[in-house]
Image 1 (cartoon, rainbow, N blue to C red):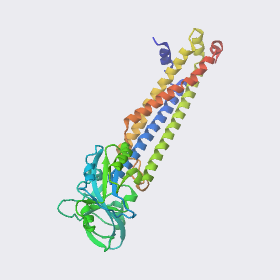
Image 2: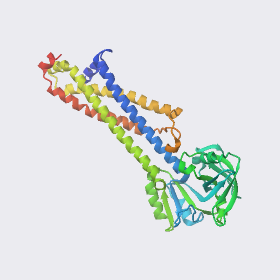
Image 3: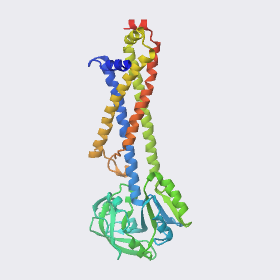
Image 4: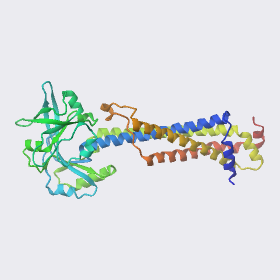
Amino acid sequence: MNLPLFISQKISRPGSNTFSSMIHKIAILSIAVGLGVMILSFIIMRGFQETITHKLVGFGGHIQITKYTLNSTYEELPIAKDDSIYEALHKVSFIDHIQGVAHKVGLIQTEEEIHGVVFKGVDENFNQERFGQSLVEGEFIHLNDTGVSYEVMISQKIAGLLNLHVGEDIRIYFIQNPPRIRRLNITGIYSSGMEEFDEKTIIGDISVIQQLNDWRSSLVGTVEIFIDDFNQLDEAENYLFDMVDYDLFVDKITDKHIEIFDWLSLVGRNVTILLILILFVASFNMISVLLILIMERTQMIGILKAVGSSDRMIRKIFSYHGIRLILWGLLWGNLIGIGLGWIQSRFKLIPLDPENYYMNYVPIKWEWMGIIGINLLVLVIISLVLIIPTLIISRIEPIRSIRFD
């Protein structure tokens, strides 16, 4: 029979209105609230990182390959899809998808407004599944191999600025020598939540740009590459840099939008600091609670010592008692954290300003291994700090403790 465990179970069930009962509730509540906040902070932080990364990748790929050029405009030098390097990319194991696009600057003119835009031309290989989540009205442009599609999708922001709707025609003046005009029909309206992109980008058929630039149909301006694992982005960039010709430039998404990824990294560091502070406070609270419980049980400790119990055995009693409180705190903490996370994920109760946060509501990303890791971290750290208050047991003298009141 495990005597320390047996005694700890007896003293862990105090009367409902006793001082010990109140202390037990405070201990469980402090751990539960701390763990709940830690879980919420973690899943929200991961939600931010995943949502923003997914949007950025959906609109430009993980890696972009372009021709080296000295100009700083959106004009691109062409890359041939029938080139040997383009074919070699399809054989790289970590590449999930390849699509060719092109960009050209233009002006949308309405009866009342003029707005500068970047026309992004896409072909039939464009990853519509990733983009489809951003479509808020209408449908994707219809692409075909036989001719030019004069359809276009505009952002919700541009539609609001110029008072445009699905089904209307717009005139775009493309800036070149001589300038050229195209009349395009709006088939869809999207919203990425990224102001920099939504403010200027419209999406149409790459054949329009090929026609304007006098390119043949096998030429594109940029090769957008999607990889299997975002965590392998640096290795993929280095591999492709060594693989492509000297006149091609390899640019990864984290460098192209470095300010956004720096912000996401800062969010991650802030969450880590918050988790450490909460863990420290929970540990301090548990030390205080166990000290109070030891002081309350001073007479019991004296009696146990008088009948021959060792300090080690008595420490085990209070350690088991503390771990029991920790486990109850973990149970309620998971209910709080996961419960509130599920409510936000299901009903999206907490809104956000998309101009500042790139999304309309607080996102939730369920990473169960991370949640389990937080639980184990709390259990191990707080269980270890329980050694500190139990050290006072060795200083308690049996005669004085029995008389203690």
